[in-house]
View 1 (tube, one colour):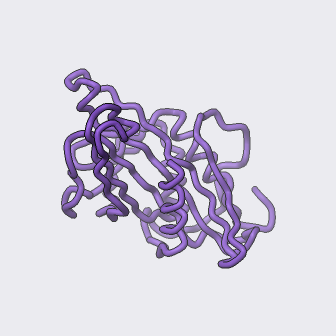
View 2 (cartoon, rainbow, N blue to C red):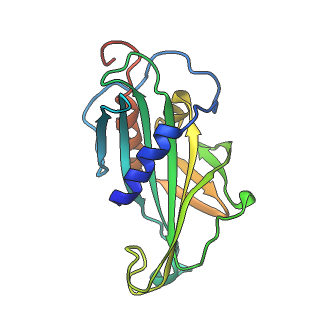
View 3 (cartoon, helix red, strand yellow):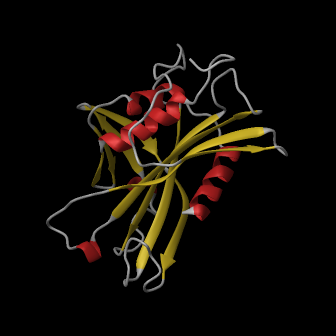
Length: 209
């Protein structure tokens, strides 16, 4: 997953700030605390660009579908992060991105724009975010895919820009499901905790609030 993180850092650096979930107003609502999840959040400062990137590394979302056998099941991971100027920030991030990584044996399924439209069900409120960008796609040879060991596999990574308010709305949800190309990717408590942890690291003043 290290390659995915490097590509993610590059995308964040080049990203353009989006306008999802309305305007960015108000202070952070998620203060730093001890968060209960198994995800890994990394922070890296680039002296050349004078930017800091904070990223939740690819976090597998376990899906259970009794109609599918394990060898043909589609696997998903989420990745999320933001970038800001300098080593410390006193304002909102320049860019916040949410990535979805699909890995399975069904071939490339997300090449068409209409197959990359992302909606999110947050506590029974359905929000259409729009068309995700195809960051990369790759065909694994037999046995080289971590998700489909012993099988030929296909990986596709998508991204979409969020506002700070958008990230908070997702992170603070209790029942959150990503809807993409007929797939329902249900985020468990641990994934939401990881997103809360990430959001808690965003500053809007000279000190964490």
